Length: 613
Image 1 (tube, rainbow, N blue to C red):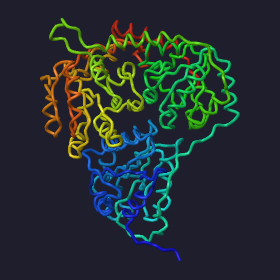
Image 2 (image 1 turned 60 degrees about the horizontal axis):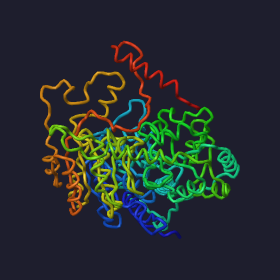
Image 3 (image 1 turned 90 degrees about the horizontal axis):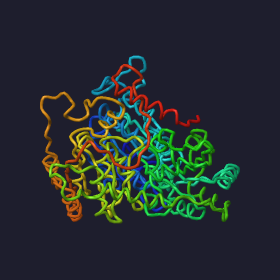
Image 4 (image 1 turned 135 degrees about the vertical axis):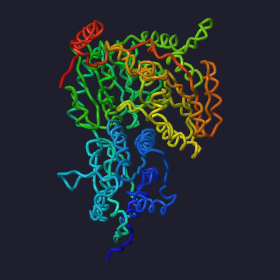
């Protein structure tokens, strides 16, 4: 006779999650972020209280930013561990949809458990319930369907027996990895059921390493042997496959230079002699020169996003061929690429063995040195004799942080000016760079920094955030203070959305609605970010110079709470180095001369696009 244990569905869920283990003997779900409401407080809330430290509960300030923290945690752990996030029904649930999209684009695991309406429908419509006039099975949680890898609605307590293993199977699948939504009907959370005791036996989840098809491998070996000017594009998949050392060995053994995407930056150190930095829109001059002449582009764990490809103008050699090493056939066959489906580390090992002592012809190593000299110039501290009213550029702010960074420093960002500036200028140590640029979500920064610090407490986390992103989502700063989670925020205040203002100008538009000065307001806001951050308990200071910023970062290292350093910056200059075209459509007609000029530039660049579907 099967032994059973009587539990509520919510209790059963949390008990099961608490015993899902990694190969290293750690919980795969390392805690649950929670804001309680009428859709989850009675069922899930009581279950989390009951299970205690076996599955820790973390209280946040906003459902979206709690999920951002969980996603940053999983990214830092290279997808080997994850966290769950629970909310009430209605706005609590839909607040998480943006975070689900962020995780989906970035292929990162997070378990979302929003409360749902009553399965028995007796009290319908309950507070915050969305009613579909034509479909009685729809709730607000159906908004998650297009932005998660797996969706399920738990309308009976025994559904857990199948939906929970399916959820973890997705989250630990290297090819299909991404967010999961288990919409949990609030009455079902509280219903009791006799669950088999065997269901709660600890289980180890292994992250597999798929082997490549021998025929695909052979095809790519031939292509590499024929290539005269190959280049590797190193993406985030290199990091998640823990293939950093293998990629460096492959590049060295076969004399192939590599460039790094936003997600792949920091897999290998900037000082690797074959690392030419970033390609594309926010690319280094040396990387873009390599890409322009490449006759074979070998993508490793990259989606070939438009910033990487400069909207498909970066790889300008008419004879170029594209290879895509990826875990999922969907990514591996994009843009007419020759696919090589498999785990990045395994594929690189097998490719190298098959190539033997083959070495590609030489490349211009000197261009890399020239580029780093340019970086040193634009990131240098302001010279003496400048007017005292001159504000520092974003590049100079990056230089200040770079000069005091250590091998334990991790810089992070997500949106605005700094992601592009950091990609092209920051000289990343291995595992020293964390960028959310798949979704480039404003508001990820503060919560994401907290998630990184949770996952890697031995690191010094430095969060670059502009005033615009800070205003969107800053409340998890209070959570970090409560939990004594230290990190440093460098808040660059350019009084508006400076990045998009520059793009608006480049596209021929008038300066409008981005900077406060162009927003048709009666009073220009004078926001005291220092007072705001201090009110949440952070150590907050205004720094008046690049030298003060450097000193402030060093001083923050001894604190056990977040530090916020606010510095006014010039909104006008870009990075002053590198870059390429980005396809942002310009109006074809109906504007002044500046729009006509911008359209002419747009048309000229569009003619350079090499797109294969």
